[in-house]
Image (cartoon, rainbow, N blue to C red; front, top):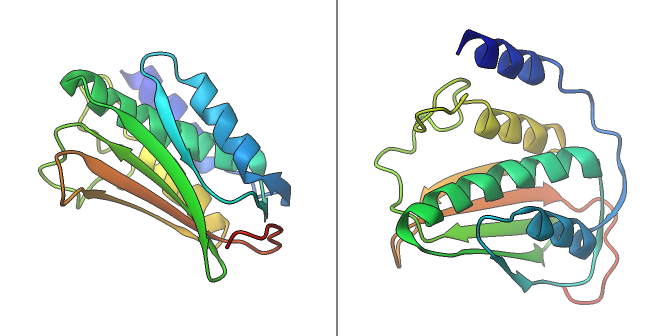
Length: 165
């Protein structure tokens, strides 16, 4: 447990500055969907666009969020969906899960707080740090229409290319 803690702490403390370059959102999301093997992640798509961002960091952020969503949905035999859209000058990526939801969402982004028996409590804290380093936000809230959670990543698009806004 101490080893896990130290590795997690080192990862959080060493987050480098983003190295922005053009990232094709469709390709990035496609890679994330293909990585998850425990449960099919449904991509509901979004506009063809590119954003100016650090693709490695965004990929890590999305892997963390999708992994959490799948963890929750596997327990309930639910599903996970991911979609995106461009709203004004923001890219919004939404990940919905059909898990049980969370009894309390106030501590989720606190480093080393975890609701999982073998969790490190670093994934969401690191994800928030990445979002903020890109000038964005990440929220996690219980869904109102059905059991489960919704994670929403918002980052400024910087340089967006795509007609479907």
